[in-house]
Length: 233
Image (tube, rainbow, N blue to C red):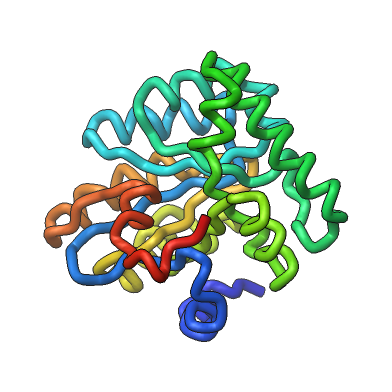
């Protein structure tokens, strides 16, 4: 069973319930954030980077620490192309299944992997790479308490085309186009599940959305749009 049709309703319920998470932009400008989970991947991410470079679009990547360690050269290329980087945990394990210490270690291990792969200072990574998207979109109020305590910023989504089940490029693109609006935060995947189609999907999405007048921003830019009372971290 595919759950893509119900994600917009889940978003409408969860966004006001957990206002400390970043769910979307303010909606007063035709801006969109393209985000990619589960990478970097040795094949799919380089293909995606080529498309993003062709259209000069900056995107946001939420990385798994284990994948960074397996493909450090891809991580470095992504960083050098000035994309925004966030954390997805060391492995793709739902955060509520981890103890407090395990969750903390998972995020810190991912930061260490990023520092080594991207050849940047670990202190810089700890201070600046602190956006976190929970795997599977699963979190609890306690998860959010931990993230706030450790000065991470929780990032969620407003458009989820469920590309990881590979519904087909045309279906993925149609779902995004149908749901898109000002400030949308789109989740796609460049990892082993869904990454096969990501470059081709994005190659169709970017020009179509640009023709509709949308421009692309990073997660950090969406955070900066929020009022001081709304900001987390």
